Image (cartoon, rainbow, N blue to C red; front, side, top):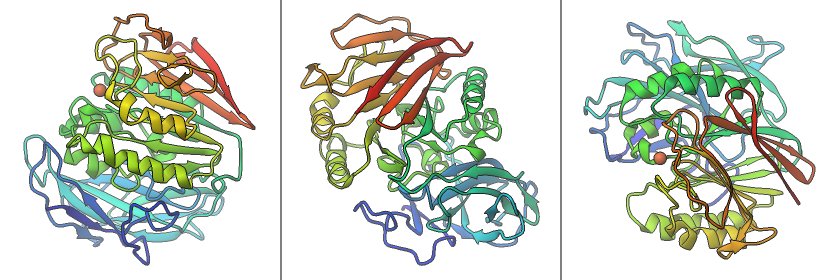
Length: 417
Ligand SMILES: [Fe+2]
Protein backbone atom coordinates (compact mmCIF):
# COMPACT_ATOMS: atom_id res chain seq x y z
CA UNK A 1 0.00 0.00 0.00
CA UNK A 2 1.42 3.37 -0.88
CA UNK A 3 1.59 5.90 1.86
CA UNK A 4 -0.24 9.10 1.03
CA UNK A 5 0.54 12.30 2.83
CA UNK A 6 -2.09 14.98 2.75
CA UNK A 7 -0.40 18.31 2.32
CA UNK A 8 -2.50 21.22 3.28
CA UNK A 9 -0.10 23.84 1.96
CA UNK A 10 -1.36 23.31 -1.58
CA UNK A 11 -4.79 24.56 -2.50
CA UNK A 12 -6.29 23.36 -4.72
CA UNK A 13 -4.62 19.98 -5.10
CA UNK A 14 -3.89 19.25 -8.76
CA UNK A 15 -3.80 15.67 -9.92
CA UNK A 16 -0.42 14.01 -10.11
CA UNK A 17 0.68 13.89 -13.70
CA UNK A 18 3.68 12.96 -15.75
CA UNK A 19 3.10 15.85 -18.13
CA UNK A 20 5.66 18.56 -17.56
CA UNK A 21 3.78 21.54 -16.26
CA UNK A 22 4.86 24.30 -13.97
CA UNK A 23 1.90 23.90 -11.65
CA UNK A 24 0.35 20.50 -12.20
CA UNK A 25 3.33 18.52 -10.94
CA UNK A 26 3.19 20.19 -7.54
CA UNK A 27 0.91 17.55 -6.12
CA UNK A 28 -1.16 17.47 -2.98
CA UNK A 29 -0.49 13.83 -2.21
CA UNK A 30 2.91 12.26 -1.84
CA UNK A 31 3.08 8.63 -2.72
CA UNK A 32 5.79 6.75 -0.93
CA UNK A 33 6.58 3.90 -3.35
CA UNK A 34 7.23 0.48 -1.96
CA UNK A 35 10.97 0.22 -1.45
CA UNK A 36 13.16 -2.83 -1.36
CA UNK A 37 13.91 -2.51 2.34
CA UNK A 38 10.95 -1.35 4.35
CA UNK A 39 8.04 -2.38 6.43
CA UNK A 40 4.38 -1.73 5.90
CA UNK A 41 3.23 1.80 5.46
CA UNK A 42 1.01 3.55 7.96
CA UNK A 43 -1.67 6.20 7.48
CA UNK A 44 -0.56 9.79 7.20
CA UNK A 45 -1.51 12.30 9.84
CA UNK A 46 -2.74 15.82 9.16
CA UNK A 47 -1.45 18.75 11.18
CA UNK A 48 -2.68 18.78 14.76
CA UNK A 49 -1.56 20.79 17.78
CA UNK A 50 -0.26 17.67 19.47
CA UNK A 51 3.23 17.45 20.90
CA UNK A 52 5.30 14.52 22.06
CA UNK A 53 8.44 14.29 24.15
CA UNK A 54 10.81 15.94 21.62
CA UNK A 55 8.77 18.24 19.39
CA UNK A 56 11.63 20.51 18.33
CA UNK A 57 12.29 19.86 14.63
CA UNK A 58 15.59 18.41 13.48
CA UNK A 59 17.03 17.49 10.07
CA UNK A 60 15.25 20.53 8.63
CA UNK A 61 15.80 20.72 4.90
CA UNK A 62 14.27 22.04 1.73
CA UNK A 63 12.84 20.19 -1.23
CA UNK A 64 11.33 20.96 -4.59
CA UNK A 65 7.58 20.29 -4.84
CA UNK A 66 7.56 21.36 -8.48
CA UNK A 67 9.95 22.04 -11.31
CA UNK A 68 9.80 25.80 -10.67
CA UNK A 69 11.86 26.74 -7.59
CA UNK A 70 11.15 30.45 -8.08
CA UNK A 71 7.65 30.10 -6.62
CA UNK A 72 7.66 26.79 -4.78
CA UNK A 73 9.54 24.98 -2.05
CA UNK A 74 9.07 22.03 0.29
CA UNK A 75 10.14 22.02 3.93
CA UNK A 76 10.84 18.72 5.62
CA UNK A 77 11.88 17.75 9.14
CA UNK A 78 11.69 15.10 11.83
CA UNK A 79 10.36 15.09 15.35
CA UNK A 80 9.56 12.45 17.92
CA UNK A 81 6.73 10.14 16.85
CA UNK A 82 4.13 11.81 19.06
CA UNK A 83 4.31 15.28 17.57
CA UNK A 84 1.65 15.99 14.96
CA UNK A 85 2.23 19.72 14.53
CA UNK A 86 3.40 20.34 10.96
CA UNK A 87 3.41 24.12 10.57
CA UNK A 88 5.52 26.38 8.43
CA UNK A 89 5.73 30.11 9.11
CA UNK A 90 7.36 31.92 6.19
CA UNK A 91 7.61 35.51 5.09
CA UNK A 92 9.89 38.15 3.60
CA UNK A 93 13.13 38.19 5.61
CA UNK A 94 13.22 41.93 6.13
CA UNK A 95 9.95 41.96 8.05
CA UNK A 96 9.76 38.40 9.47
CA UNK A 97 7.65 37.38 11.34
CA UNK A 98 5.50 40.39 10.52
CA UNK A 99 3.77 39.66 7.26
CA UNK A 100 4.55 35.95 7.44
CA UNK A 101 2.14 33.26 6.23
CA UNK A 102 1.43 30.03 8.09
CA UNK A 103 1.03 26.82 6.10
CA UNK A 104 0.03 23.52 7.61
CA UNK A 105 1.26 20.23 6.16
CA UNK A 106 1.26 16.69 7.42
CA UNK A 107 3.43 13.92 8.76
CA UNK A 108 3.79 10.17 8.68
CA UNK A 109 5.60 7.38 10.41
CA UNK A 110 8.21 5.35 8.60
CA UNK A 111 10.51 2.49 9.36
CA UNK A 112 13.97 1.17 8.74
CA UNK A 113 15.87 -1.92 7.71
CA UNK A 114 14.83 -3.40 11.03
CA UNK A 115 11.25 -3.09 9.80
CA UNK A 116 10.23 -1.06 12.80
CA UNK A 117 7.61 0.99 11.05
CA UNK A 118 6.64 3.74 13.37
CA UNK A 119 10.09 4.44 14.74
CA UNK A 120 10.37 7.80 12.99
CA UNK A 121 8.08 10.69 12.14
CA UNK A 122 8.66 12.80 9.07
CA UNK A 123 6.91 16.13 8.52
CA UNK A 124 6.50 17.98 5.25
CA UNK A 125 4.87 21.20 4.14
CA UNK A 126 4.71 22.12 0.49
CA UNK A 127 4.31 25.64 -0.80
CA UNK A 128 3.38 24.99 -4.39
CA UNK A 129 2.95 28.44 -5.90
CA UNK A 130 2.99 30.73 -2.89
CA UNK A 131 6.47 32.25 -3.15
CA UNK A 132 7.71 35.20 -5.18
CA UNK A 133 10.78 35.01 -7.43
CA UNK A 134 13.93 36.89 -6.41
CA UNK A 135 12.77 37.19 -2.82
CA UNK A 136 14.64 36.48 0.41
CA UNK A 137 12.49 34.56 2.88
CA UNK A 138 12.86 33.62 6.52
CA UNK A 139 10.98 30.63 7.88
CA UNK A 140 10.63 28.31 10.82
CA UNK A 141 8.87 24.95 11.10
CA UNK A 142 7.23 22.95 13.86
CA UNK A 143 4.59 24.42 16.13
CA UNK A 144 4.05 26.20 19.42
CA UNK A 145 5.35 23.16 21.29
CA UNK A 146 8.70 23.42 19.55
CA UNK A 147 9.95 25.57 16.70
CA UNK A 148 13.06 25.10 14.59
CA UNK A 149 15.65 27.83 14.37
CA UNK A 150 14.84 30.43 11.75
CA UNK A 151 16.48 29.94 8.37
CA UNK A 152 16.75 32.25 5.40
CA UNK A 153 16.96 31.57 1.68
CA UNK A 154 16.42 33.44 -1.57
CA UNK A 155 14.23 32.25 -4.41
CA UNK A 156 15.72 32.45 -7.91
CA UNK A 157 14.16 34.50 -10.67
CA UNK A 158 11.59 32.83 -12.90
CA UNK A 159 13.02 30.13 -15.19
CA UNK A 160 14.70 31.67 -18.20
CA UNK A 161 14.89 35.18 -16.77
CA UNK A 162 18.53 35.33 -15.67
CA UNK A 163 21.96 34.01 -16.64
CA UNK A 164 24.26 34.17 -13.63
CA UNK A 165 24.18 31.86 -10.65
CA UNK A 166 26.33 29.29 -8.87
CA UNK A 167 25.90 25.53 -8.56
CA UNK A 168 27.83 23.17 -6.27
CA UNK A 169 28.09 19.46 -7.08
CA UNK A 170 29.27 16.51 -5.04
CA UNK A 171 28.41 12.86 -4.46
CA UNK A 172 29.04 9.64 -2.55
CA UNK A 173 29.24 11.08 0.94
CA UNK A 174 28.35 7.70 2.37
CA UNK A 175 30.47 6.08 5.01
CA UNK A 176 32.52 9.01 6.26
CA UNK A 177 30.66 11.70 8.14
CA UNK A 178 33.89 13.56 9.01
CA UNK A 179 34.75 14.04 5.34
CA UNK A 180 31.15 14.87 4.50
CA UNK A 181 31.23 17.53 7.22
CA UNK A 182 34.25 19.12 5.54
CA UNK A 183 32.72 18.90 2.07
CA UNK A 184 29.41 20.49 3.00
CA UNK A 185 31.17 23.24 4.99
CA UNK A 186 33.39 24.07 2.01
CA UNK A 187 30.41 24.01 -0.32
CA UNK A 188 28.46 26.29 2.00
CA UNK A 189 31.40 28.73 2.14
CA UNK A 190 31.28 28.92 -1.66
CA UNK A 191 27.70 30.18 -1.33
CA UNK A 192 26.04 28.20 -4.14
CA UNK A 193 22.48 29.05 -5.11
CA UNK A 194 21.76 25.39 -5.89
CA UNK A 195 23.45 22.18 -4.75
CA UNK A 196 23.34 18.89 -6.67
CA UNK A 197 24.32 15.46 -5.35
CA UNK A 198 24.99 12.52 -7.64
CA UNK A 199 23.64 10.10 -5.00
CA UNK A 200 24.81 7.66 -2.34
CA UNK A 201 24.30 10.10 0.50
CA UNK A 202 24.38 7.21 2.96
CA UNK A 203 25.79 3.68 3.09
CA UNK A 204 22.41 2.03 3.57
CA UNK A 205 19.30 3.97 2.69
CA UNK A 206 17.23 1.97 5.15
CA UNK A 207 19.46 2.82 8.10
CA UNK A 208 18.00 5.87 9.78
CA UNK A 209 21.00 6.45 12.02
CA UNK A 210 23.00 7.13 8.87
CA UNK A 211 20.48 9.64 7.56
CA UNK A 212 20.36 11.32 10.95
CA UNK A 213 24.16 11.55 11.02
CA UNK A 214 24.22 12.86 7.46
CA UNK A 215 21.73 15.61 8.23
CA UNK A 216 23.41 16.41 11.55
CA UNK A 217 26.78 16.78 9.82
CA UNK A 218 25.14 19.19 7.39
CA UNK A 219 24.27 21.56 10.24
CA UNK A 220 21.79 24.15 9.01
CA UNK A 221 23.10 24.17 5.43
CA UNK A 222 20.21 22.07 4.08
CA UNK A 223 17.73 24.45 5.71
CA UNK A 224 19.30 27.40 3.89
CA UNK A 225 20.46 25.92 0.56
CA UNK A 226 18.34 23.64 -1.60
CA UNK A 227 19.80 20.32 -2.72
CA UNK A 228 18.73 18.48 -5.87
CA UNK A 229 18.97 14.83 -4.80
CA UNK A 230 19.77 11.84 -6.99
CA UNK A 231 18.92 8.29 -5.98
CA UNK A 232 22.04 6.13 -5.71
CA UNK A 233 22.36 2.37 -5.37
CA UNK A 234 23.13 2.76 -1.65
CA UNK A 235 19.79 4.44 -1.08
CA UNK A 236 18.35 1.02 -2.02
CA UNK A 237 14.95 2.45 -2.96
CA UNK A 238 14.36 2.43 0.77
CA UNK A 239 11.30 3.94 2.36
CA UNK A 240 13.56 6.31 4.25
CA UNK A 241 14.70 7.80 0.95
CA UNK A 242 11.18 8.57 -0.21
CA UNK A 243 10.13 9.68 3.25
CA UNK A 244 12.87 12.25 3.69
CA UNK A 245 13.54 13.38 0.13
CA UNK A 246 11.28 16.04 -1.32
CA UNK A 247 11.95 16.05 -5.05
CA UNK A 248 9.35 16.58 -7.80
CA UNK A 249 7.31 13.78 -9.33
CA UNK A 250 8.23 10.25 -8.28
CA UNK A 251 11.44 11.50 -6.62
CA UNK A 252 13.48 9.05 -8.73
CA UNK A 253 13.38 10.94 -12.01
CA UNK A 254 12.37 14.56 -12.30
CA UNK A 255 13.22 17.88 -13.88
CA UNK A 256 14.05 21.23 -12.35
CA UNK A 257 14.18 24.64 -14.04
CA UNK A 258 16.60 27.07 -12.43
CA UNK A 259 17.24 30.21 -14.44
CA UNK A 260 19.05 29.16 -17.60
CA UNK A 261 19.45 25.53 -16.43
CA UNK A 262 17.16 22.61 -17.19
CA UNK A 263 18.26 19.81 -14.87
CA UNK A 264 17.09 16.24 -15.33
CA UNK A 265 17.74 13.80 -12.51
CA UNK A 266 17.51 10.10 -13.32
CA UNK A 267 17.58 6.88 -11.32
CA UNK A 268 19.81 4.06 -12.55
CA UNK A 269 19.07 1.71 -9.61
CA UNK A 270 15.72 0.46 -10.79
CA UNK A 271 13.06 -2.09 -10.02
CA UNK A 272 13.13 -3.50 -13.54
CA UNK A 273 15.09 -2.86 -16.69
CA UNK A 274 12.24 -1.17 -18.54
CA UNK A 275 12.66 1.82 -16.25
CA UNK A 276 16.06 2.27 -17.86
CA UNK A 277 15.22 1.27 -21.40
CA UNK A 278 11.76 2.81 -21.68
CA UNK A 279 10.24 4.77 -18.79
CA UNK A 280 13.05 7.25 -18.24
CA UNK A 281 13.76 7.49 -21.96
CA UNK A 282 10.15 8.57 -22.53
CA UNK A 283 10.39 10.95 -19.60
CA UNK A 284 13.48 12.57 -21.07
CA UNK A 285 12.02 12.84 -24.56
CA UNK A 286 8.96 14.62 -23.19
CA UNK A 287 11.19 16.92 -21.16
CA UNK A 288 13.41 17.84 -24.05
CA UNK A 289 10.49 18.48 -26.38
CA UNK A 290 9.21 21.06 -23.93
CA UNK A 291 12.45 22.50 -22.58
CA UNK A 292 13.56 25.95 -23.65
CA UNK A 293 16.42 26.48 -21.20
CA UNK A 294 19.85 27.48 -22.49
CA UNK A 295 21.65 24.73 -20.56
CA UNK A 296 20.73 21.08 -20.30
CA UNK A 297 22.31 18.98 -17.58
CA UNK A 298 21.62 15.47 -16.40
CA UNK A 299 22.53 13.97 -13.05
CA UNK A 300 22.33 10.28 -12.20
CA UNK A 301 24.47 7.92 -10.15
CA UNK A 302 26.26 5.16 -12.08
CA UNK A 303 28.39 6.74 -14.82
CA UNK A 304 28.03 5.82 -18.46
CA UNK A 305 31.69 6.72 -18.94
CA UNK A 306 34.27 6.15 -16.22
CA UNK A 307 37.91 5.11 -16.31
CA UNK A 308 37.74 3.96 -12.69
CA UNK A 309 37.84 0.19 -12.78
CA UNK A 310 36.21 -0.43 -9.40
CA UNK A 311 32.74 -0.15 -10.88
CA UNK A 312 33.75 0.80 -14.42
CA UNK A 313 31.19 2.26 -16.79
CA UNK A 314 27.47 1.46 -16.82
CA UNK A 315 27.62 0.71 -20.51
CA UNK A 316 23.91 -0.06 -20.91
CA UNK A 317 23.29 3.65 -20.38
CA UNK A 318 25.33 4.40 -23.48
CA UNK A 319 22.70 2.43 -25.37
CA UNK A 320 19.58 3.60 -23.52
CA UNK A 321 20.26 7.17 -22.50
CA UNK A 322 23.26 8.62 -24.35
CA UNK A 323 21.43 8.81 -27.72
CA UNK A 324 18.70 10.90 -26.07
CA UNK A 325 21.28 13.17 -24.47
CA UNK A 326 23.09 13.62 -27.76
CA UNK A 327 20.04 14.32 -29.91
CA UNK A 328 18.75 16.69 -27.22
CA UNK A 329 21.96 18.72 -27.00
CA UNK A 330 22.64 17.90 -23.36
CA UNK A 331 25.76 19.79 -22.29
CA UNK A 332 26.79 17.91 -19.17
CA UNK A 333 26.08 14.56 -17.53
CA UNK A 334 27.06 14.28 -13.88
CA UNK A 335 27.39 10.97 -12.04
CA UNK A 336 29.14 9.46 -9.03
CA UNK A 337 29.41 5.83 -7.84
CA UNK A 338 33.12 5.62 -8.61
CA UNK A 339 34.76 7.49 -5.74
CA UNK A 340 36.89 9.77 -7.81
CA UNK A 341 36.80 13.01 -9.77
CA UNK A 342 36.69 12.44 -13.51
CA UNK A 343 36.02 14.42 -16.65
CA UNK A 344 35.59 13.06 -20.15
CA UNK A 345 36.30 14.47 -23.56
CA UNK A 346 33.16 15.68 -25.36
CA UNK A 347 31.45 12.59 -26.75
CA UNK A 348 29.06 11.96 -29.63
CA UNK A 349 28.10 8.53 -30.98
CA UNK A 350 30.74 6.79 -28.93
CA UNK A 351 33.64 8.94 -30.06
CA UNK A 352 35.32 12.21 -29.14
CA UNK A 353 33.60 15.04 -30.96
CA UNK A 354 33.53 18.79 -30.62
CA UNK A 355 30.22 19.94 -29.21
CA UNK A 356 29.53 16.55 -27.68
CA UNK A 357 28.35 15.66 -24.21
CA UNK A 358 30.82 16.18 -21.35
CA UNK A 359 30.70 13.57 -18.58
CA UNK A 360 31.82 14.36 -15.04
CA UNK A 361 32.08 11.90 -12.16
CA UNK A 362 31.96 13.55 -8.75
CA UNK A 363 32.05 10.79 -6.15
CA UNK A 364 34.46 12.15 -3.59
CA UNK A 365 32.36 13.45 -0.70
CA UNK A 366 33.30 10.84 1.89
CA UNK A 367 33.11 7.25 0.63
CA UNK A 368 36.42 5.33 0.39
CA UNK A 369 38.40 6.62 -2.58
CA UNK A 370 38.98 4.33 -5.55
CA UNK A 371 42.58 4.58 -6.69
CA UNK A 372 42.40 2.24 -9.64
CA UNK A 373 41.77 3.82 -13.01
CA UNK A 374 42.70 2.64 -16.45
CA UNK A 375 43.31 5.09 -19.29
CA UNK A 376 40.66 4.98 -21.99
CA UNK A 377 39.91 7.11 -25.05
CA UNK A 378 37.15 9.07 -23.34
CA UNK A 379 39.00 9.93 -20.13
CA UNK A 380 40.54 13.39 -19.84
CA UNK A 381 41.02 13.83 -16.10
CA UNK A 382 40.90 11.22 -13.31
CA UNK A 383 41.80 12.03 -9.72
CA UNK A 384 40.84 9.87 -6.72
CA UNK A 385 40.50 12.64 -4.16
CA UNK A 386 37.88 14.08 -1.84
CA UNK A 387 36.43 17.05 -3.65
CA UNK A 388 33.46 19.12 -4.78
CA UNK A 389 32.75 21.05 -7.96
CA UNK A 390 31.64 24.66 -8.33
CA UNK A 391 29.96 25.81 -11.56
CA UNK A 392 29.42 29.49 -12.30
CA UNK A 393 26.84 30.33 -14.95
CA UNK A 394 27.19 33.53 -16.92
CA UNK A 395 25.95 34.66 -20.29
CA UNK A 396 26.75 31.93 -22.83
CA UNK A 397 29.23 30.05 -20.63
CA UNK A 398 29.64 27.97 -17.52
CA UNK A 399 32.99 27.89 -15.69
CA UNK A 400 33.70 24.78 -13.62
CA UNK A 401 36.31 24.39 -10.89
CA UNK A 402 36.84 21.18 -8.91
CA UNK A 403 38.42 21.72 -5.49
CA UNK A 404 39.98 19.34 -3.02
CA UNK A 405 39.29 19.85 0.66
CA UNK A 406 42.41 21.97 1.11
CA UNK A 407 41.03 24.41 -1.46
CA UNK A 408 43.40 23.37 -4.23
CA UNK A 409 42.08 23.41 -7.77
CA UNK A 410 42.17 19.85 -9.13
CA UNK A 411 40.47 20.64 -12.44
CA UNK A 412 38.91 23.56 -14.25
CA UNK A 413 37.13 23.81 -17.55
CA UNK A 414 34.45 25.81 -19.31
CA UNK A 415 31.49 25.01 -21.51
CA UNK A 416 30.20 27.68 -23.84
CA UNK A 417 27.40 28.11 -26.32
FE1 LIG B 1 27.11 3.98 -5.73
